[in-house]
Length: 473
Image (tube, rainbow, N blue to C red; front, side, top):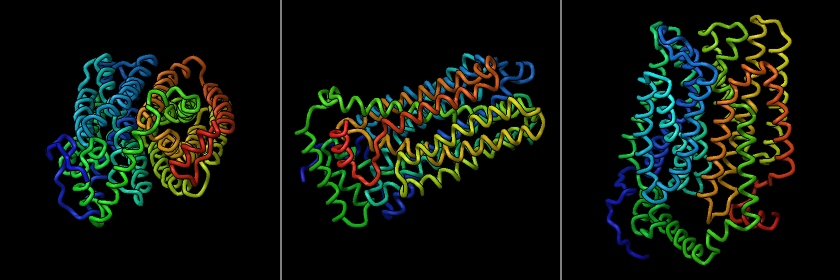
């Protein structure tokens, strides 16, 4: 095995001392603090918005529908840039250092939003926070996959999605609790300030996790990669075998078509378009209109602010349960089958919600019927569509350009997310309840896209998927 010419104190090197299973558990727990912060930051805006729309003299920021959309979407635009930039940063300087930088951005962004004196300051702070959120969405799953090992990878990487929805549930619960207990002006500032906690935990935790062995190997530091793997695997022999596989893969990769030439091949471009289309499909279900604006929707049915915030906890509970069910279902059903099942139910629930809001009289029955439609929507969205989207992002693209293509597709997904977040309050103000019929129509188009364009990848290795798609496309 070649010896390393790099110092053991490089940017992504660590000196862990724990049993393999315990060290992996600690590493995944630390890394998923980024996912928890991601979920909390995207979920807490739902509880904060009703208070931020109050006049300045009542402790709010006086948001209009336009600025409400800007504040919500600014985080997501930042996430689009963060998901692209973090790929370069983590490839050059290491996953662990990237997570450390992102943790600082999480803390700074949360502090900025909690102390924002004006709408422009709030938008800038949310944008900074978004860079951390997007960077975490791209870096955390990669870091977990690279330390987990083949036998544990699927189970451990799936915890990233679980921590995202858990962060959203935590945000909904704390919003309701704070609204019930505190009646001070500017309560939304406390909600946003709590987002610093997972960022601080992530920052501290990065000093206790190992380097990414795959990153070390990609830099030719095979001796150091083996040293780290010996702390993560059950035996030195298993660590040595894994490093030898990394060496063989790297040597084979050097003989392949150059990445710049591969990116111009038609089948690769078609895959990128499919990846972008899947991001459109996932976001234009309208899921984040519900994740960000459910309290606003329920208030429009006549429900009080505190009651609406409490009811929104159901969003988080259903999302967590649905994610657990989705992790179970992915191992048993095809990707296309789950996507199409989810989209059919999404169309039905969007149409049903539009009918409830348009036709039923405004009373408590309407409020809870609307909430039921939202919860059924989220059950199928988070069980059948969201986990399959992230799984396909890790499967579809050729290994040689996987990081670049995944980053590009995920970045576009964040831009679609921002579009929905920004347009939704404007659409509700302009169109009213028929907005949900528009979403239903868009999702019928997404269903056709999945049926005609998305390939099935279940039961194939990554190498088999690549060969199959190259022939098929």
